[in-house]
Length: 420
Image (tube, rainbow, N blue to C red):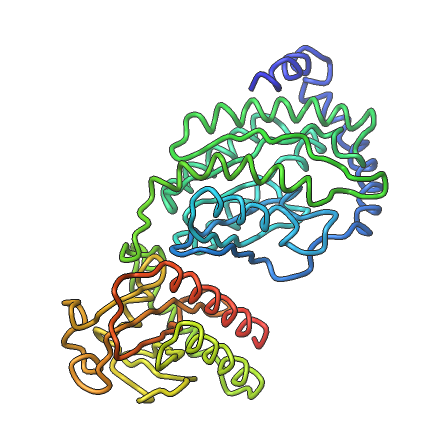
């Protein structure tokens, strides 16, 4: 916090540190921002799906929430904004896949963050990255309220999602070109004060990491930001997150988060997503069949299927050389797969006590090798799995097989989202 302390002390000593003085300046700041935000409306930002993935097995799932840098100003795809660079930087450090979901909006504030986050299925995530504060710095928000809101947010998150939470520091406001003015200087000094409060609150909160970020680069006078800006910030966030993620279980057969403390509720939500699913569209059906064909060929197996777990049965809704159309759910490969952290690979099902008595293993078609990866609905529930199986066993669990299957499962999910 050395970088913030001196400016923060200066702000405390100055006449603008008094809340009453700042309240008098608030209308002027709002008027100034209104003119700037008219220009921001013309600034590019991502318009693609708010999901980015980086390759690898046993993926970590990250939620990126907030405003400011998380919005992706200056680029038109999340892949070239903070989510894409964060996914790739994390995977490079962890040697696992990374999925980043983005929930961002320019108007997000700390005082509304708790309500929005509490309404989400946070138990699906392995870590949360929160980017907030520039709005409050520009509004000269009271430091006491900021501290209270942040304390409540981190306390509640620790109760409902005890995972690492990275709270990024407010950047130097004048380093953002559109705010580089005298009034921007006032906001910058106030941002230092808010950062001091954030550092103290995070230090006292379990799982919380307060993280100053490098100054963002601006590639040209006419550009708001560019990929280099996000790449640098992502490297810093990934370096802080990777050690925390390393303390989480990452074996393929570890229980997965989507079955939380209230499994009955999770199953109700999952079944509702299945009921809302429509696979009757012919274009979607052709796309799914194509993916299954790729899975069958690339993994060199006899059969590839998409199974949907519907109440107490698993329904094969699209397939390549499938021997059956419907099977009991209980004790099945796919029911196990959706409950695990990542995918599931069984080199020889006859040697696995969980499945050796399963009808398709003990009888026809005599499955020996199985690999599956969960498929999520557009709303995020695990509705089933992309599975491949073969009557010939394999020598070992191959991470490359699981990584390839995950790529195809993610492609299948994108097709489902596009259809929905």
